[in-house]
Amino acid sequence: MSGRPKLCPKCRKLVGADDQTCYHCGANLGLRGRLMAGATRTATTAGEGMAWWRLVLLANVALFVIGLLVTIRSGAPISGSGLFGMLSPSSSVQLQLGLQVQSLVLSGDYWRLVTCLFLHGGLMHLGFNMYFLAQLGPTAEQLFGNRGFLLIYILGGLLGSLVELVLGNPVLGASGSIMALIGALAGLGMSRAGTWDNELTREMIKILLFVTIFGLIVGSVAHGAHLGGFVGGGLTLLLVQGLRRRRAQAVLQGLSLGTTALVVGSFVMMGMNLSQPTLGELQAYEKCVQHGLVIVRDASKTKTKEPQWNCFDEIRPRMTGTPAQILDGIAEVIRQPNVPGGPGRLEALIEEHNVWIRGEARRLGLIQ
Image 1 (cartoon, rainbow, N blue to C red):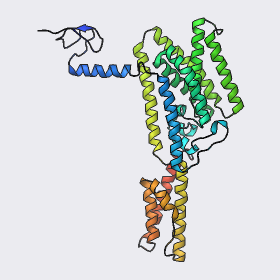
Image 2: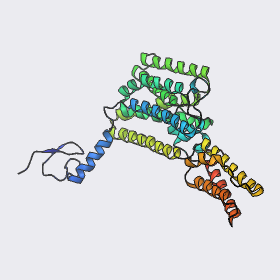
Image 3: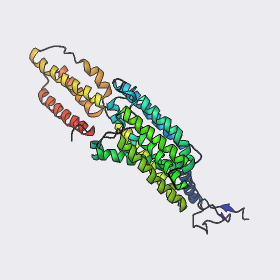
Image 4: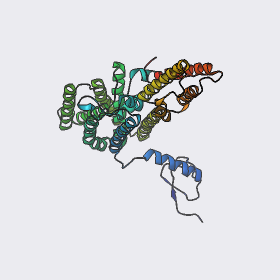
């Protein structure tokens, strides 16, 4: 006996209880087909009803806290210069987390174009940008939807990053993405009213002027990212509105999923880079290696019985892989300087160290 009609998991139209194929869209109605359709629907509707601007704000705050913790772990001071630089992660940690630097991006670190949008150079810098995100985010998400908000925030901010990349300036901060929201909201007011003289656009222009003038007073502001973000927000608005008018929800969903994947992928690359030694740790390691080589040289001349290599105990626990092996090798030569083959072993360690440290210098953009 046939049961009650059921809904096709793909097109959501009624089909027979015993049907194995939907005669509307051709979807497989078996167990495998239902599971695949359910997974696809879950992926495309993920986040609906959720305030995405809050997630973005939390990501910014979380990365700032991570930056401070990594700075403390590396032994570098938490400080900074200027109003926006107070309570700041160290410059080497910012570089590890994804500060946009032209030479690094052009050498293949394209993920920095995205990660720089979530990083900040100080507590005031973070607070300033998050205040405007909290003011603009709810309105933008209500008007554009969560997918539209995400596209404007990320793609608009990305255009700001690209402008600064061309100018050759380092970039970090959410201000380019904030300016994208301002540009999109200003453009929406104009498109609805048919003129710039409307309440929404006037409010956005006031905020734009305030941020610009404040940036000129404070200094060290990426004006290229601001301009690029503002224009990028307007252009992304046109894209979102065009897709909505054509009711191309599948395309809009695809773009939002692609943008989410871009952000997640960039964060994964950030995590991989964060697992590498910071610039400060590399400098301490290099200094310790040179100290060890001096000990080896002096020991061969003075026959000191128990040379002190104090930095070894401090630096060695932080190192893994090649640098750890180099430190252990030098320590062995120090302990047993007269072992047959010792000089050759030391030369090999020095060469291995030079090759590794040059690779790290390239990774950090210190050399080409």
